[in-house]
Every structure is written in C-alpha cells, then in structure tokens.
Image (cartoon, rainbow, N blue to C red; front, side):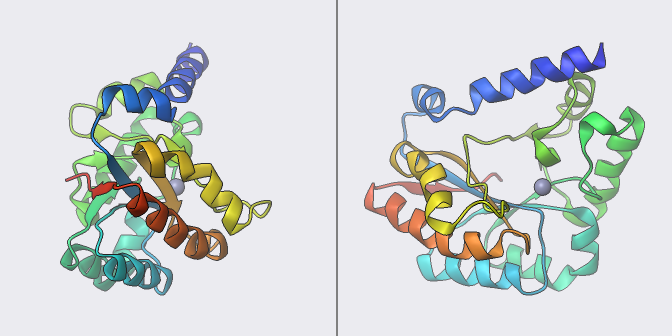
Amino acid sequence: MIITFSILIFLFIVIIKKSWIWHIFHREKVIYLTFDDGPQEELTQKILQILQQEDIKATFFCVGDAARRYPHIMEQIREQGHSIGNHTMHHLNGWRTPHKEYIQDIQEAQNYLHARYFRPPYGKITLRQWRALRKDYHIIFWTDISYDWSPKMNPKRCFKKVRSAARHGGIVVFHDNPKAAGNMLEALPLFIHSAKENGMTFKTFD
Ligand SMILES: [Zn+2]
C-alpha cells in the first residue's frame, strides 16, 4: 500500500515539476532559486558571495545537523536576506524511513531552522508523510533541477538542465554540497545571467 502511494506521489511530482505546467499557472516572470543540503563551511560563503554580487535572494533548504554545526553560517544566510527551509535533520529518504522517525527528524531540525517550508531529500515522500507535514509546512518540490551533484555532468550541461526556467520561470535546484561544487559554482552564474537577460525576477519562499 505504502509503495503504491509512493509511486502515485512520485508520478504526481514528475507531472507537476514540468516547467510548462508551471508556466500555465504562474504568468509572472519569477524564479525561486533554491540550494539544498547546506550549510557548508566554505561553499555556502561562495554561494552567498555570488548572490550578493548579483543582488538576488534565494532559499536555502538546510539539513538540521549541518545548521547545528555551523550556526554562524546560518546567521550569515539570514543576515543577507535569504530564506531558510527545512530539509530534515539527517537528510533522510522518506521512502526508507518509518513514519514516526521521519516526522520526528524534521521536528528536530526545526530547533535550528525555524522554517515554514519543507523539501523532502531526494524528492521522496510518502502520502502519509505528506499529509502529516502539510499541516505545518508548505512542501516545495521543483520545476527544474541542475543535476550538479552528478560526476557525469559538467557546468554547461547543468546550465542546460535549468535553462528553461531562465526563460519561463520556475523553482530551480542547485546544491550547497561539496559533491556539486565544481558544477554548481560555474553553472549558477550562467543561469543567473541568462535569467536576468530574460527579465526574470528572483523571489524567495518566506
Ligand atoms: Zn538534499
């Protein structure tokens, strides 16, 4: 039963995340730029520097355990006017974690994040988890993902993956994660410049 619901939710995500459907419902030229998995000691600073240079705001879906380790980085993110979302305490896979444990992990992360928005790691969440969480959170997936963490990718290909959002708007995912750094730090400015050329506005979830 749980597997069936998970598959349904997965299909639902696959369908709603497509940019063209986003475009039908969102006529403004808006981009929600999001960074998952942070904060990190050095990488987050580099992202913040790029965002400051470009004068745009973003949303960081942070892992509670990392926020606990780097409170000064969390403060910097907030000080610079960006938003914080919850990405669980230990980056759990909702499909592989018992219900109670999953919900408790997210609640634990709230001690460090105080967020109203939640993004499930790997985009994997069961219907039961979703129903429990939607009372307290807006659950945010994405329309365009850069695959910046993949060793098979390069910065140009990552940019191509999210280019449609630079034209039509949407919710874009990059990763504040050392695995993604090489691709992300080059693809991010390409994306931002392209979006600006297309007259996009950057908004945050807050
Ligand atoms: Zn993640």
